[in-house]
Length: 120
Image (cartoon, rainbow, N blue to C red; front, side):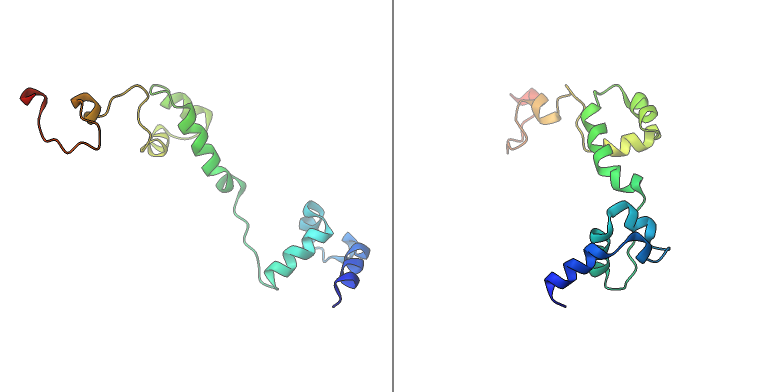
């Protein structure tokens, strides 16, 4: 179909023209975007994850940013998670102000020295 004709037909399409089953989606995104989604799906069903699953990465980044080394319980309450779930989210986040073993030994993580503090 000619692109211009297609665009005219989309503009002339009303919500009432869309099957009731799909109308709520068309109401949310608009008729033109609904047609684009329809083109994308090519007749297949599209799965939309639950909103909370979409928001998980942003929530986890915020938890990591808000972590101060002492507030796991408060973060769990704020984000309605268990302290174990918060701990899992923070598993790769260093505790603020805590030295790692290489800093404590004064070597830095890249050092190939194998001497202990006593041997210095």
